[in-house]
Amino acid sequence: MARQIKPQSGIMDIALYQSGESQIGDRKDVVKLSSNENPFGPSEKAMEAFRRAAHTLHRYPPTDHASLRRAIAEVYGLDADKIICGVGSDEIITFLCQAYAGPRDEVLYTEHGFSMYRISALAAGAKPVEAKERERVTDVDALLAACTDRTRLVFIANPNNPTGTMIGGNELSRLADGLPPKAILVLDGAYADYVDGYDADTSLVESRENVVVTRTFSKLYGLGGLRVGWGYGPQPIIDVLNRVRGPFNLSTAALQGAEAAVRDQDYAAKCRAENTRMRAWLAEALAELGVPSDTSCANFILARFASEDEANACDDYLRGEGILVRRVAGYKLPNCLRITVGDEASCRRVAHAVAGFKGQR
Ligand SMILES: *Cc1c(COP(=O)(O)O)cnc(C)c1O
Image (cartoon, rainbow, N blue to C red; front, side, top):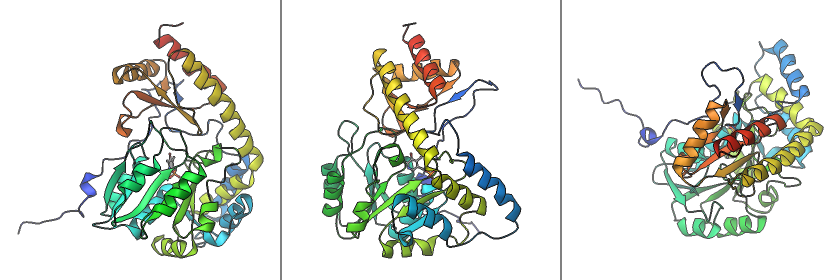
């Protein structure tokens, strides 16, 4: 009998996620600026909490994440009942697609939007749809024009990765209010922590029934390896997402490490300030070398080159100097390189290497 074992339709259209490289052969002096990680690592307090969790590894973790949700709610001034925690914000994106988008449904995002939106839509059997951006900035009119009665989810990262640009709350309100009745607006706030005084537009969640915000511990909090993120949304949506969430999705170590990290706002503020300072320095240093970038609101810079060939040649050159950055042709930005803002030494090293590449040293 001929077997006919096949995955659900859409699955084989998923291109495997390309993560930022971390090694160049066995070179010891590699600077990794390819994954938007915090160059200073996690808070000491988060590491301490993680180590303490070793003593209770024989116990199942709590399923309700109450203690972490309470800490997040206190720090960000939110309602703990409207928070859901996941294995990175990637898992919250997955839950949203799984719960709200299936075959024949559409999941909308922007031209240079984060690759997980497409992957999660396809994994759920839904159809990914892209709207144009305007000069690497989210275009609300293009998104509204791309909506149909099959649109179920609209994903916007604000600030966006890999462009680093963001749009204002008024534009986001206009988008939320203009969506078809069956659609949810998901604001991915992975980089919101880098914007001083910005609430990631969680206020839109309070005043509407169709807005969900996702946040992460992977970027500013320096816990990409721990895998913790969270979502904030209207109670009925959070109730739905909790039904698809595995009861023990987060380990005790992850829960306790993240809680200690979010309670250490002094450390978070220091990392934010240092990112702001070095981001401005790096953008200016590159601009002086003839490599412009849009004003970034995140922890990376999208460096623009004259052509795809020049961008690739610069990437090769940087590699030769032991510096890893990210090619973004997969994000329809072939003439750009995304460079994470590292610590001061790394920023100086990358600027020095670009100068070498440009023959200006
Ligand atoms: C890094 C990033 C995330 C965070 O993913 P985690 O699963 O929380 O590590 C989410 N969205 C965007 C746009 C990102 O760049």
